[in-house]
Structure formats: C-alpha cells, structure tokens
Image (cartoon, rainbow over all chains, first blue to last red; front, side, top):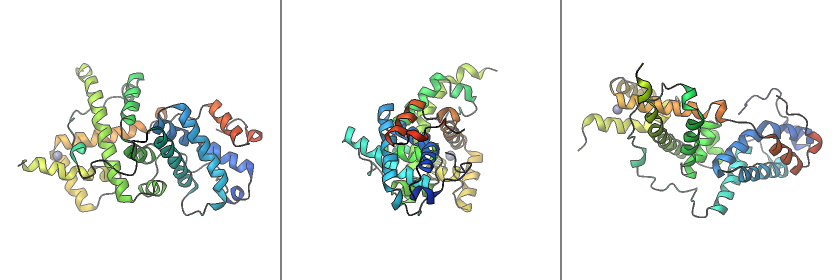
Length: 201
Length: 88
Ligand SMILES: [Zn+2]
C-alpha cells in the first residue's frame, strides 16, 4: 500500500462530505482492499462484495472516525470485518477468534530443510510457481491468513494489524510466526522439487 | 530426550519471526545469530522464510483493481461523476 499518497487525503474534507475527496480515498485504497477480499474469500465475486461493503460502510461512518488510527488502518479494520463476516456466512464452521491447538507448537516445527531461497524470481513466480504460492496462502487457516495478509502482504505494522483485527500485539506475533512457518513449509515442499534439475551448473 | 542442538533450534525458532521484523531484544538476537552461524538447518529456515515474505510482496503478487470492478464500485457509491481515469 502506498503510505504517502502524492497528496494526502484530507480528513476534514471527508468528514465535511466532500464527494471528490471520497473518490480519491476509494482510488487510493480500493486495490489493497480488493486484494485482501480476494485472498480471504478466494473468488472475485465475494472480493467485490467485500470491497463495496467496505466503502459503503466507510461512507456511512466517516463522521465517526476519531483518528485514533490512520485512515488506512481504519479501512482495513472495516474490510477485515466484512471479509470475516462473509466468511462466517459461507463457512459457519470456521472459527476466526480461536486458534485451534494454540498451545501445540507441533505445526510450527520445520520439516523441510532445502534452501531454495537462491532460485531466481522468474522461476519462483513463473505461472506454475505463482499458482503454488497462491495455493499455499489459501491453505492457511483463516485466523492466520488474515494476520499474514495485513502484515506481510499489505505491510501494516504489528500494532496496526493488532488494531485492525482487535487482537493483542502478542497474539498477532504468535499468529504471524505460525502463518510464516506454515507457508514456508508448503512452499519448500513445492520449490525444493524444482531445485535438483538446476543444481548442476 | 532430544539432543542439545535440537532443543536449541526449537527454542530459537519462536524468535525467528521477531528477528526478521527486527523486533528481537539484543541478547536474544546475539544468541540467535551465534546459533545461525553454526546451524545449517536454522539458517535455511531463516533464508526461506525471508524469501517467502519477499515473494508475496512482489508487484506481481499485488495486482491493481480491475477497471470494471472499479466502475461498479463507483456506481454503487453514487460516485459516477468522479469516475475519472485513475490517477497514476
Ligand atoms: Zn538450529
């Protein structure tokens, strides 16, 4: 996300109901919010619902924005809630608040020890590689995925992520570790298979 | 009973994420770096974890909003009049 838009969005104008300024807000943040919806829900139709509901909600509540967080964090908070609400509706069995087996460190323990980090980006993000990466993100449990997306994909700080999700910073850090480790395991299994063929120089 | 090295790996693993974020206290940081210098597996875990984060942050992984989705969004928000070509 662009943290320093070329000219700063004016909160005063937004609160005063300036439509042009709201349009600028939409253009500044719609891409990351759509992306978040896409990765949380896994399909464009739901992502678009999340996107529209987020800005409808923001338009209704901008008067109540207290500036305790940045506008970006505030929007992410709305978007995360919309995404999780839709997710709950579609998959009632998903529990976002609880981390299943929280005390159990078993799934954080690495089992893949192949160093694929020197593979060139063209290889890692080739058509197939990109698909593997998307699939790896999709297999993260929702409660970890939302933390990972806000922190590592969209670049929010630990504190901003905690604010947006109503979690403690400790909780964010724990989830982030688990998400990163799970993703790394998944990608290692995939990319390590690409290594041997290339290893003879 | 696991052997000493193995226990060390698991102990430090929990700090890896904070280390990547530059959010680890100096003592632990030093301890981790000392361990990394002599433990291949932990170094690999660190490198591949960092690389994983790099990958999801590449522009390729952060596509822009499709124009038709943008148009429908502006319409839904009654902002049609402001649907100018998207500023770069
Ligand atoms: Zn180790």
